[in-house]
Length: 383
Image 1: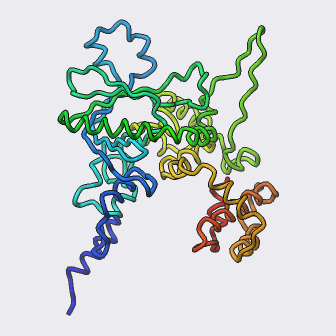
Image 2 (image 1 turned 60 degrees about the vertical axis):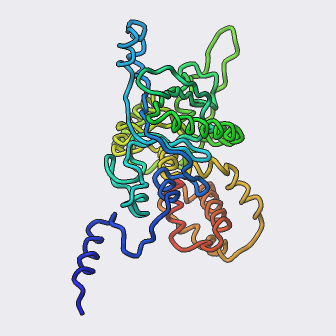
Image 3 (image 1 turned 30 degrees about the horizontal axis):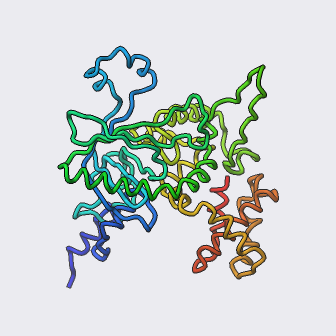
């Protein structure tokens, strides 16, 4: 017998890809939490509380700060966002989005991008902050909230002597009973102690981010002292050597870099980046080539995976050096057929990078190893 209801349901799923299928397994709370904030598999939601994120005012207003009275100063603070503050084993997460733990939530709606103001993904305003990136937490005296925490991050940790990059600070006001707030603060205290073990990993990963170089101070030029040597920029792909695809003037790469530099100076970068509405606008305008890989890593969550194992790539290559496999034989066949029109893959430099990435992946994921067209995907990422 013809079932009209099932046909209508299938048609709705084709129209709206975010509708859960009837056969889709109901995801657990931990899975939805990880999908919403793009966290590694080992992370689980330990604490959750309604809170208000209060950011510092723009730097152009800070010079006038002394002229304000206390009440006027409080009003002159920067943007405020009300949302949910979540705590896991190694991360402190805040989002203005509706919680992904709703009864109607599904794996599909939590893992797909559905815009800035709706959906269950991490596109809302907020942050995903590794606890190892928190330098100091202070409790503030507040009339409006029972618990207000001033958080100072390790923004610029790879360059502690930077003159024009002051520590990043923001305030979180917890909204709940005293018992809820104390429980959350106790969990945060334990997580911060445990996070000290990951500070070295954070330094290693952050030092490879272009944003650290982009926001670093200029070399000091003083007649009395020796000039400070210029810092070498981190590797941002083959485009730095063989030029990036497209016309840089039409793409307005320099203008985009200036906008991102201004945003990151006010809202943190890499591990400490805070998502405000301007963040989403800058992404829609288009990412500058030198920051593309870093922003991709942060928004996809691969940055937080690398934070847990910063040496996985190099260790995998060194441990399997000289070994042979069927996947490696297939990789060698396709190396010279990977975007040959690009100058970078007509050189040993580009071919060598492509070979190393594909080989490392084949050893990391032996069930897949290598299949055709993976070389094209990796080649595009390496540019």
